[in-house]
View (cartoon, rainbow, N blue to C red):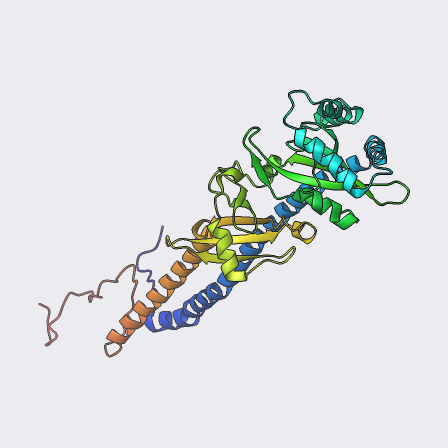
Length: 386
């Protein structure tokens, strides 16, 4: 039990001094640190977005290279090389004009006759049967076409619209003026199978001389690449986009390539950074006409270095209110505490200024002692008892 008469005194002047040397410096340091750390924390989160973009871009890069490698292996398989070499022997002793006339005649009747023995022979050949078996083992392979050194078809999984392929763009890139080169066609959408696909072409080379003797071209389903960017976790997480270098979305949350939607986020990157270099990565904070702003991490897939049609870029995007939400909460708390501290000190200074000409009284007394009374009772000025 507390004894009566205990006093709790806080001299205003001393309280003001304590506040000035403790609360004010701490509040000022807090506000200064807040202004300095804000940019650093933004850079940290921006770099996190860049790292995510680089990781997904590497996954896309590896996915495409694996598909290219599979077709390269097919082009070196003995059944393919042997069949192509055998087909080229049929031109021995013929002039270039005679070869061209022979191919043109077959090409002319390719789709006219109800039953063409040449078509039937190609579709029933051992290599065509082997190719269909190869395709069935990998559902991602949609079609395979094998041609000889003149661009004439010698084996297919499906009947193409033409017999002569030498004047097709894809074949010219594989032929590469006789040197032979790997070629990838731009991504396309197949209405029948509802798939996104690319064309992968490899030269077939002679085992001994390594010279170009034919070509293998495959249409490969790449719809699975969407799994690297689609995020089923919901809208609170960053959106991950796969974009072509013309801005068209290849894959994104609730978006498919066939929709041909252009990405405003990619346009913002081009405006801020310009054309991206191979494997270039970074992040920006971009404002949009609707008044919103986004943090956008980006990373080039690196595919365009070898394949000109594949300027694919991965974007990681999120509204800045969500991306920096945790930081802003801490910032507001620090600002609030610092503001309250400075406000209270200001009130104390104002109180001291208003009462500085008056006797300084003690504040916070818990109890007041009663005035002392003489034992004999009160006396008047003459010294007599009342």
